[in-house]
Image: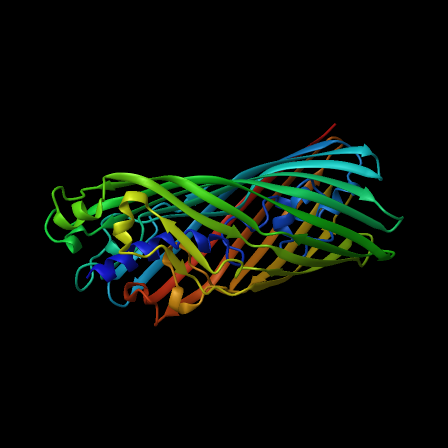
Length: 426
C-alpha cells in the first residue's frame, strides 16, 4: 500500500516536467501574425515577436515599435478512465499575454530587441470530488492533481546585425523565472488510522538562463532560409510543502520525522531546439513558409524530489526516471496581401508526441498534435492590428498500459485559441 502511495505522489509531481514536451500550451505562437501562419513563420515573421521566435528577422523592422499580444484559450479536456470513471477539466479558460519591443540602432544594420513572454507553461484544474477507484489510492481522486500549474516567464534581450547584403545574424538570452504550484488529494489512510483523505501541496520557484542564435539568408531574390538554435534551460526550484489532514500522533509518520510543513526542491530542464524555416515570395502578394523544428525533450533523465522532513511520504525515493523522447514539428503557412493595408493568413503545424504510454500523465497530456490557424492583419501609418484563431486538435488517444492504472482510458484534448496583437510604431 505504501508503494502505491509513492506512485500516487510521484505521478502527480511529474506532471510539471511534461509541460514542455513537444509543443504543449504556451509554445504555440503568441502573436496573431505568427499564429495565423503557425507552421511557416520562421523565415517570414516581421513583427516584434521575432525577437524570440526568429531574432535575425528584427533587422527588417525600420522604425522603433512595441508589440502587445493578448490571447484567450478555451480547452475541452476530458478523461474517460477504464477503471475510475470520467473527469473533465474544471477551469477551461486561460488568458496569456506578452510584450515585445524593437529598436533599430542603425537602420538595416543593427537592431536591439527585448521581449517578455510565457513560452512554456501548464495549467490544469480538476474538481476535488473526482471519482474513487477500486481500492485505496487506485482512482482518479487519489492520482490526478486537482491543480497543476507551471509558469515560466522569459525575459528575452536580443541583438541582430547585418553580415552581408544577404545574410543577417542575431544572438539573444533566455532569462527565465519559473514558478510551480501543485495540489492533490492524499489518502492518509495508507499510513494507518487518521482521516482517510487530506491534501498535499507543493510550491516552488527558481531562475534559469539560456541562449539562442539566429540567422536569415536570402540566397536568391524572394527566397529566404532562417535558422534558430536554442540552448536548454535548467531551473532549480525551491519552496515549501504543506499538508492538510496529516494524522497527528501516527507512529509511522512521527518516527519518520514528517511534519505539516517542510521544504520542497526539484530541478527541471526546458529543452533546447534547432529550427529551420524556408520562405518564398511567389508573387508580390503571396508568400509561403515551411518550418521544421527538432526539440530535445529527452534533455533530462530524471527529476529529483526533495520534500525535506516529508521525504518519508516518498518512501525512500529521491528521484524519478522519465523516458521521454525527442520530437519534431513540421508545418507550413501562407499570407496574401489584399492591398497595402490588409493581409490574410493561414497555416498548419504538426507536433510529434514525446510522452510514452507507460509514463502518461493526464495533467500534461501529450499527443500527435495538429494546429490549424487563420488570421487577418491591418497596417496603418503608425499602428498595426492583427487577429488570429487557431484550433489545436489532438486525436483521441487511448492509453492501455500506463504505470498508474487509473490513467488508462480515452483522452480528449482540444483547444480554441484567439489572439489579438497591436503594434505601435514611433
